Image 1 (cartoon, rainbow, N blue to C red):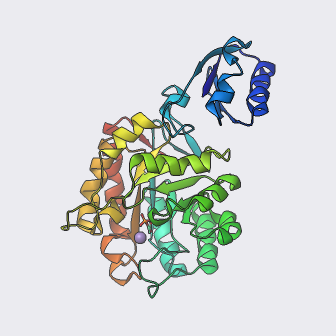
Image 2: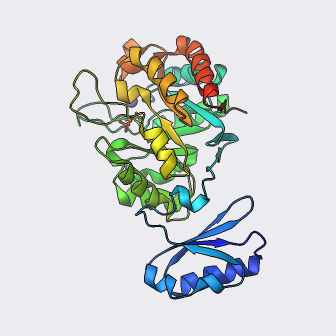
Length: 341
Ligand code: PEP
Ligand code: MN
């Protein structure tokens, strides 16, 4: 249920509604818009309905949310978009976030060179994996804590907020020390224990769509974070499995406008993992920006041919400025401005 408060509702009235919702064992999620406050009541619908909140002072209306995803639903915010502030960079609404960096942190030089190049070209955030979800257990698994240390150094030097993946809740503490956004990989999208743990941490999270997941399943993953009171969720379309074998995954660009109808959360696109090939990254990025994505997360490497991981899809660092310029223009077509400080 969604309890929409009147524009002039007092704090006291809001608090009383929250208390009444909680008195029947439901959870109350407060969402304060510019004009109105909406209280999402998650729990037994019958119990909440019996409270008769319609007549309560300060309550405008009580609307049932029929979808299985509630806190992420566009309905909850009355169509208003969520805008997140990640270290001063805005994500969502009219803002376009360019998230760039290597697939994985390999060396100090590789990390810092890439970070400087993407910062100079106007990137909003820096990405890089210290813990890598590799298909083969025999492949390089990431530098772990040493990788986190290098990311901290890149942040210190460039000022760029860090996006890095967490695969195992046991690594949460060290990851929280450096991450401004925790990435949940496509293969972990349905790791509900991990999502809940990140939800409780309060750290912003970027959730990648699973290789074979529906948009509803993606939103249900977001729900696990949101239900812990963590409202900072970014969704990411990164390509799905289809019958097509000519490329690695099929980038589902239709997901962008459709997700925007379904949810108030920002939606970004990862053209690198979808394509698996550098030559497709440019065109897919332009298409994603033009179709209204709230940002792009893209892989960049100073010497892609030497990369330990995902080299064939990485953009060379010295070509990133030209790429960023083009992407920025496509984003402008969709009415968005690059998010920087
Ligand atoms: C990555 O971003 O490096 C990655 C492994 O992505 P995905 O989880 O989408 O495969
Ligand atoms: Mn990668």
